[in-house]
Length: 78
Image 1 (tube, rainbow, N blue to C red):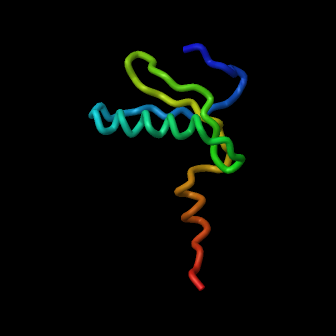
Image 2: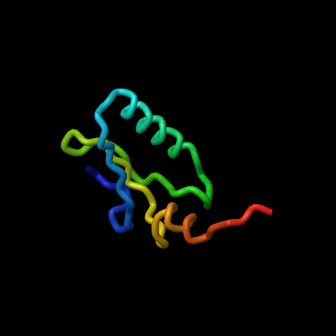
């Protein structure tokens, strides 16, 4: 892998499923991320294959998982 910005911390997402539908969904997600330029969406740094596994390296964001944030902020409906 030849990382475009090796000095950055990154979150790595690896495709664990091998089915055709999972691979298509992973590819589609990557294509969508390539087209988004927003301060509210993590940026795609690099993607490809390593040892036969598909991966995406994305901008690292401090603060835990989205699930954890949402669970800690139980919003009420008014």
